[in-house]
Length: 386
Length: 223
Image (cartoon, rainbow over all chains, first blue to last red; front, top):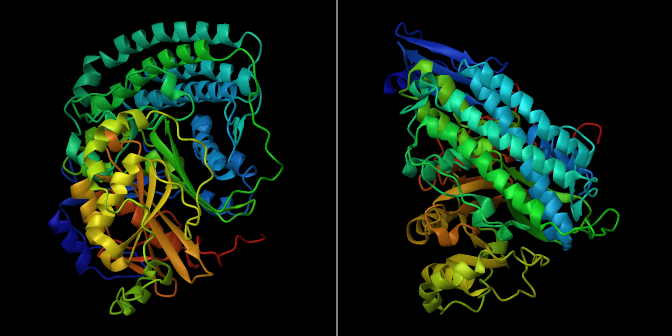
């Protein structure tokens, strides 16, 4: 490690950060990404000494859109559709905390039925995201069945969300004050039927994928992130829970109706890559349990949305609200100066926090372990870039 | 940009923002240390209940400040009894406390928050540009994983620096988790973090040759 640093220091600085390195016969530099295979839209440079990774430098930003700047040009309502673009597969969760923060600034209360519908939509969307992630995780570890099955089962939840919101992927369903529309007829029965089927499927996932000896060999004991390191690096979501910290925003700081739901925070103590892949499965099971309770407790009638004046103005002040998304805590810090447009919006996303663990885990690991470490970080490049 | 920052390295964090130097509004909790000890029991009741949707108090001038709940009072008391006039505690709403500090004291205060109050990681670092005050505010959102009582709390550690020569001491030696967040703040707002190993481009394109885009004078083309 020190060796490489010397090489960089001795080289000529060509510009702002273009560095000419002196050639080194021993080390091989490898650029992974940013155009797919194997990294998502995310580039990172690694250096190899034989089979071992000795240097890793993440370079996100390939799909940076300037969401935070765009927010300053649009009013609180206009911001909703473009804010879900960073994670279209989890679009209900990324607009959820935005809505919570705006509600706090504008000072409105969501009706009870609206709170339940919101929570159901976000649980469904979390399943959609986690299944998508699992499919990619499966294919990059060479298990093509695990690509096909979650992609197919994901359609169940997409169809439910389609019936609920009218759109398959980008829903723009959560708005400050509640949700856009009420649930369709027969939604509860359909939802319960799909959940019952999906729970059976989860057992099959476990048999064919998680109990597969090849997968276990490739992931168990690989990429150890100890509890202390996980806390110091400030990782979140399944990465944190796989390192033995039972932290879930739904439990730690319950929003809307989550304090009425009885559920357990799923976590593991083995701290390895397998745990980081297995915790999402446990989360999906628990999410089925949460959805049953939400459907059961939802009031049969009532308003789904509080009346909001057109072009609402936020009270001068600031708000920081967060929800648990598929990738961990997702927070919005909004500063309002009393106009209809936010003065500053900062999106704190789980993906951006989790890549800090990537160099930490990769340095010292074998190149062959790179996919299992990288994908288990539950990293969504577009969300991290914003 | 790196040339600029090298040139100004001698100029230090002497700029004391005007808004911080005003005396701290004592939130009626300064001599209330006893609550900190007894608060652990009260929190289990307080935290699961959803916070009432109260309009947030104003940031800079807290005029009609609501009285903080007992647990927040304890936290506030602990901080202000330790640092006195060095910090200005602003209570926003239940579960959210904001502290203003001068850039000179930020490392000391952060170390205290980590070691004595178990705020062990930073969730995000948000820079906000205030051209009217000619200042940039950088706020660290600190949370706690290791203490279950504090799981719901976010403590905002905020400081302000001069806009023309924006530089702050880095908190990377206290909170490892701020590394990429500070780097992002550097490129988006042009705040140079002294002691940070890489004040460099991160998310922007490699050939970016404009002012930091989250400063207010940067306009999106055509808007």
